[in-house]
Image 1 (tube, rainbow, N blue to C red):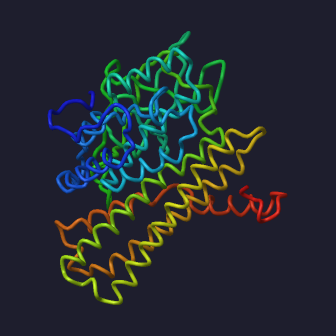
Image 2 (cartoon, helix red, strand yellow; image 1 turned 135 degrees about the horizontal axis):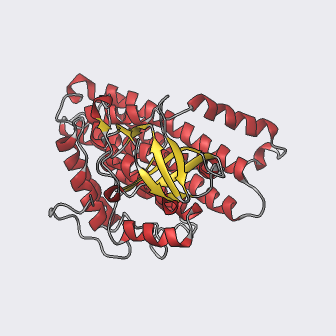
Length: 391
């Protein structure tokens, strides 16, 4: 189904200048006001994505648009992801998955595939996502004939299950003249229904992201549904370098905490308390340091991608530093916020309890220890002087 299924109006955004604060901030406030209404297991922020579609944000990275992937605008994209996350982390998570899928299409699709999938996102306002996580019963893509394939197996943590129109699913390609980890994009309205296990999704937070387990067994595809060659999904720096996008959404959660605690303390007339001032100061400089990380990561990623030679190791190491630093920023901000608002502030319907749960859950990204050691490995093995490591 398309996301355009409701009639509720969104803040009016013009076709150009979508990134200006006067256009984005009313949408962020609307997302935040709506978040409490959909904070339950199995819910999906359908109205929120109608608003994003009306705002032109589902196609903002397409050719000729404001954040066209062909242009060096990674920093602006990170700021957009951060602000959507500040409105609602569940929406930010799903929106980041949509952007991730479009970026993989930008990198690896044929011209014919791009025309079709870009029209899906821009004209038809269909939602994309990337579903890669799996357990022991993961996906295999069986070649069944010339240009035909049948899927077998399941994916877990399929955010937006039942609402994503074009899920990008990965699996082991077998029985063809090529082997490896293959991407495919499923045209949901043209295949049989995909069974969902919603009992799988009983999380601490991010309840409204509808991240169910899905069984793709029996789904039939053709060659035009396969994206890229086997193995390119893991190609660096794009695989690990994309961590800066989910880190941006996470920082939006910390930004939302700071905004909420300021309002809470002002309402209680606690702004003269010296200890509250100290805590607010720390959260403020933590969030601003996160903004500096995003700004640098965006600028350096664009710079290094444009430079001659393979800069993959440097891009990945810097992305890993950004991800790690923002995780620590968010964890410390959570702790400081708890102390600032106390038990009274963690009661519903105040926003702290929900944001706390959502951010805690979202911070649990794969392989944090390997991410950290990768940074150390780069620093210890690169021949550049310390001051020149990131220049």
